[in-house]
Image (cartoon, rainbow, N blue to C red; front, side):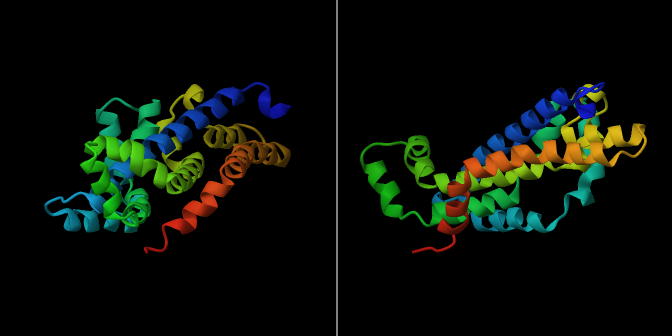
Length: 217
């Protein structure tokens, strides 16, 4: 009861959903487009570019958080949803994960669609995406959970109480009040419930997505 009295907790939950869902959904689209291009299209210098993108996985976000913060400030995006969503959209991990799914699809499938007169965009949207649906669902879950728990970046971007996410809001509440273990546990529970619901709802896709792209026939 104390968690929901005197502070905009429902607003914090809403912000967390907007940021997490928006990031997960858009990043899946961008990763799928990039992975399909590298796996199925003949791109000049594509292999070298793919290696560079995959190498970015080894670079922790904390190493470039200062210049990234300066860019957000220059764009006047501080304390907006865009500042918490857009910097997390293009990821090497998402491209790498979906690449194996697209690469495992026989080229004959795409060539047959081309013979029937289908364009590249139609092949990608109507043929390829349904085949790699388990991988898309698994990546969506991973991105959703990662963004939901991304405390540091959301702390830097959320300047007002109305734009804070649930994790940031609960943490700030702990700083402004005397230490309250019950309040802390209540906030942790509320933050964990959406993760449990998302995982249970997409469990079969997550398990399939984690294994289906691991073997190339």
